[in-house]
Amino acid sequence: MHTDTLQPEILGQIAAAASPEALEAVRVAAMGKSGSVTALLKTLGGMTPEQRQTEGPKLNGLREAVAAALAARKAELEAAALNARLAAERQDMTLPVAAPRTGTIHPVSQVMDELAEIFADMGFSVATGPEIEDDWHNFSALNIPESHPARAMHDTFYFPQQPGDEKRMLLRTHTSPVQIRTMMTQAPPIRIIAPGRVYRSDSDATHTPMFHQIEGLVIDRGTTLAQLRWTLETFIKAFFEVDDVALRFRPSYFPFTEPSVEVDVGYSSQTNRPAGAGEVDRWLEVLGSGMVHPRVIAACGLDPEEYQGFAFGTGVDRLAMLKYGMTDLRAFFDADLRWLKHHGFSAFDVPTLSGGVSGGLGA
Ligand code: DAH
Image (cartoon, rainbow, N blue to C red; front, side):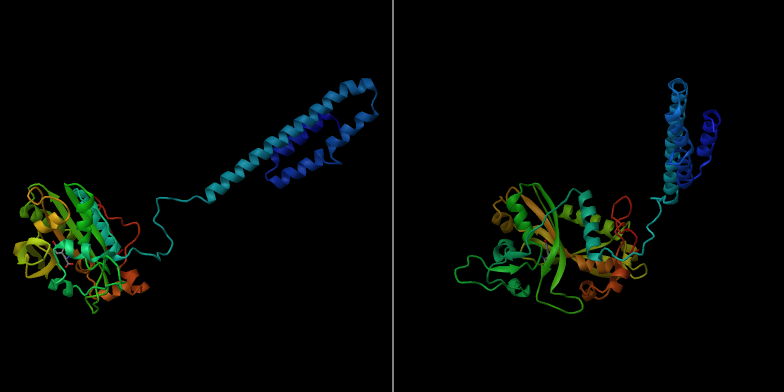
């Protein structure tokens, strides 16, 4: 067949090839060992030099045109295949996750995140301390000397003491030693919260040997009880997501505060939430607090004439139970997947003040 008719015919077949396989068949039929273009190229050998001079460039032109058309069509088909695949595998990243939700955020972690968010907004940073403490940080510096009855009340887990040990080591019984560690390493003004695990040798429906507390500490010049009251009120309102809350300050005793107050939150049985004075029908004790004892401030090397402060401490597990309605504390630490599924939170429910601190309420 002649070049002039062969070229349009092959180019037409290339254009019509709808798949890589069809294109490959066209290529073999033209450029393969016994292909039509190959056959024509073979005829060059039998030509006279004059014929070769005119036919050679034509045949080479044919070969190049076919090769270029094959390459172009191949690229076209590949691009089309890629686009089809992309369209088929398209993912809408704005859709909610469809996978079954297996892991959840534990209510204790959720509540700690909520507290950090609420107090961060009031200018508090998060401080931490060791769970294995010495008795000076856990007791003595907090104005609980060796013979003090409060030591016995704390049901402390002590580590065995070796002869010659300078310090008696223990599992901290409260987060209050973080107050001491903070005052000894940071210059006032201090505004911290310290959430974490604490340990006491005690176990029933409302007590577990390990539980969680959160401590708050403010140290500055001219700190007052009124500021404590405002801080706690603001915190309770934000935490329970209510506009109004009645608080009752009851005189109490803690060795590390003077005066000491226990704070009750007014509760409405109707809404099952903290409420304003008009709707309160019972009181729940939620916090211990007070003005930091001058002896505690002095133990940390600060001058109590210059600096005052307030502190508060409460149980995180208890706060979680009050807010989310769990009744048995022991279930918090059973690692029962059914309980976690029911009471846990989605990892996407990050507590924010703008989005609502409690996220999806058990999702
Ligand atoms: N540490 C106390 C406890 O475990 C709680 C507490 C009470 C902490 C009063 C404070 C406070 O900071 O001022 O029972």
